[in-house]
Structures are given as C-alpha cells and as structure tokens.
Length: 389
Ligand code: FEO
Image (cartoon, rainbow, N blue to C red; front, top):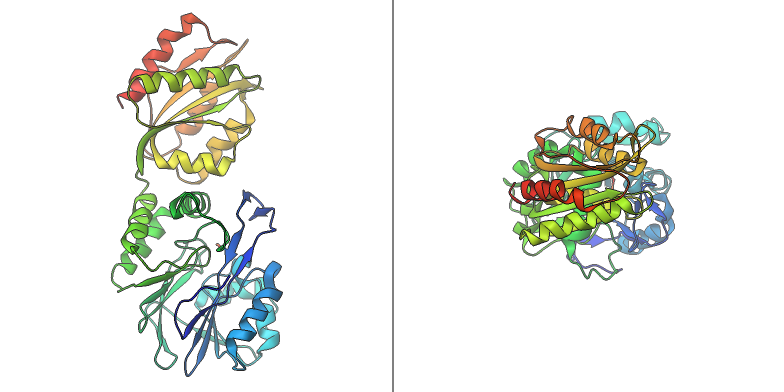
C-alpha cells in the first residue's frame, strides 16, 4: 500500500496477508504490516527492514524509492526477525552501508547473521545524534519494549518518532479497520509488550520531552493526528490501569454446564447494573482477545471445570498467560464446577495469588455438575461482591 509521509521520508513497508500465525501464536485475520522507512537527504538512511517472508516485495519498493541512490545507513531499531529479517539482503545489496545500532544490537546481531569483519557499524548511545543533512536523527534506548536492544529514533526537522514496536498494531495497512485503531492495537500491546509496562512507561517519559508530530511504528498505521489519544492509551495500558469499567467472565467448560453457569452469572451482573459484561469461551475463542479483555476491564470472573486434579487446561493456559503478561491491579471472582472432587478453584486461586494486587473476592462458588436452584444464592452473593467491587 502507498503511504505518504513526506517528500523526504518514504514508507517502504509491506503487508503480510498470508501469514497463518504472527510469532507462530497470534491469529491475524487482517494480516500484519512490517513497516520500513527511507529518509532521503544528503545522506540516505534506511529505517529497519522487514520479515524475510516479504523481502522481495520490500526490495522492489526500496529500489524504487532510492531512485538510483545508495543508502548510507541502516538504522536497526529492533533485531526481531519480523523487522531485521532482511538485514542480510541489505548487506548483499549495499556492502558499504553503515549499520546503526546500540551496543546490545551489535552484541546480538551475529546470532542472526554472519557479519563480515569489514561491515561498518556505528554504535549509538542514549541521546546520540546523526546528521543526514537537513534531517537529524536522535537515538533513545527503549530496552524491553519489546527486546533488550530496542531503541527509538526521533527525527527533529519533521518531528517524527520512529517508535519500533511501540504503537504497533495487527492488521495490514490496506485492511478495513472498522473497529478503529485501539481494538487490534490493544490485542497487540497486551499480548506482545504487556509484560513490559515499566519499560513502556520509561519510554513514554522520554517521548514526553520531544515535540512529536508523527509516530512511525514498525507495525500498523502511521499516526499523525490526535497523538494524545494514542499516547494516553499507552499510558493507561502500560501502567496496568483498567481502560474501562466492566467485567470479563471467562469460562472453561467441557460439556457446556460451566458455560451455562457463566451465562447465568453474566445475567446476574447485568441485573445489578454492571454496564459492560463480556462472556468468553476459553476453549473456542482467540485467547489473545480474551487476554486483551482481561486487561481492558477492572474486574474478571473465572469459571472453570475441574479436570485431572486441577482445572480444565484452557483455563490453566489462560491464567498462565495472564501471569506471564503481569496481569495485576484487578478484582477477580472464582466459580468452579466439579462432579466428584471439585479442585478447579484451588488451582485457579493458586495462580491468581501469584499476581500483584489481584484481590479474589468471596464467596468462591462451587457447582456440582449442573447448576441448580440451590446454587443461585451463592451466585447472587458473588454477583453482589463483583458488582459492588
Ligand atoms: Fe515487531 Fe518485537 O517485533
């Protein structure tokens, strides 16, 4: 897709609409873009490459944008193969190019590519600048937004922040985005960067000192309007604050009986005026979407069937994902189902108790095989507790 940034700054990224799973784990029904940029000045700087899956298309765009010129620099924001996958090709095409990275970049680079001794490398540190002519690049380290070597680059003449994975989003650039930027940006953020809230906060503090008019991320659209909206969401997400008031009811049901309990519980919450209740089937829905919702809302209820002395595996998997992504600062209710030895609640609570500032409210509800009228009192009591939390 053609994307206009400015006369001197060209978008040369590519859409990948055939990848089955991004990072071999995330469904991307609308694809994903690998963004790469070219700055044409007295010196020419290439800003990252793309996944090797799309290298040929990218090379064509690069060649066209260069118009016969040769890039002087390749700035490497991030070594993950979805961006660095074509560095080897750059070195074949332009053996005199200078790679620009930080000490961690160059320590890790040979793990991915054979780097010949004659390859030129320019190591930058926090705040260093590189003049291209009219354009000047300043480099800011952003370790663990998403990998340790990540850095972002600010171009001062056009006030552009090249933000690496920050402000990235699933979805090809030419895909319809009916639900707006935040939906797939949120799923991307919590599943990929979610564990690293503190490093994102540190980056936002650095970004606050810069006059930014355009954000050029490594995935998703270039942002050049209403930047406060995007930065505000990133501040909320990375500080582990809920974005919205509401309850996620996530269930793991084997034969449908726990699902009925979850739906009934959602009804009880709605009857109590809870404005937003989302019910998710962990066995069938996109886990990444449910994780996104867990972070989005201030409360969560987990309803799980007992299984093999623990909890039905999709619930265990879900809670372990939340644990890995540093889920915190939320109120949680627990419902278990068991036919002969209910043990799901104990397993779920053991995982929840490892999380920072997650308060499990009482009562814990135990259903024996199927929901009965006698279960209503305990469900109502839990609904009162969650609605009032
Ligand atoms: Fe888009 Fe962490 O790579």
